[in-house]
Length: 282
Image (cartoon, one colour):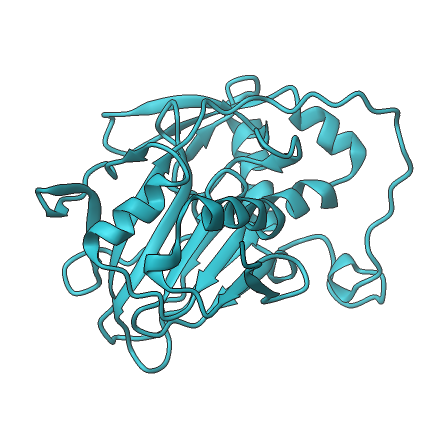
């Protein structure tokens, strides 16, 4: 089996898989991609340009393909694939993880770009492992005792998940809250919950935890929904038309480390206030 040519996009997360054709993606290739997505969290497959059924079948190599809530399928014969069109739908320009209001949110999502502007409309991703790791041990330990209620803002669906979840394959901890669907931490009073969630949202959206993909027609990007946030950069009026498919995930499990207290110091950057520029307020 030929080894895939996988090249990191940034120093933290994301990788590009070079020269891969849709008809070459079999179980052996999928095994390499599964390892790569655990390592890099986000994989870009430039120019893959799969057909509708190829797109669905590629996703099915990673688990049970599940219809996306509230969105209509492209083709009733392939109900798992939905269309996202900026001409008719709200742009997803708020940092989020998809459908965390479900008891079993998606594990992996895939986007296939059909039409995009020549400039702008990129997608950015955040590494939520790195976000959690960047917090002080005292705050990490406190967060382990908390859950958060997520809902769909319609009152139709809601779920309660740990604030810090364990990745089922790697065992690593990741912060699991997002500005779009995370509403309240029930172990805290409402003002305490609002204050803590506001802080976590702002902390996790810092640029040092991110990577960015500039789209071309035909590109496919797949990412781990359990350990990332993503957002569309809303800097263009040009049309973005994509197809999307999701792989059903597990019920999020709380992270439970056996850890002795350790020393902690902020990284020596301007944003930490170390150089006297900036501070701890956002």
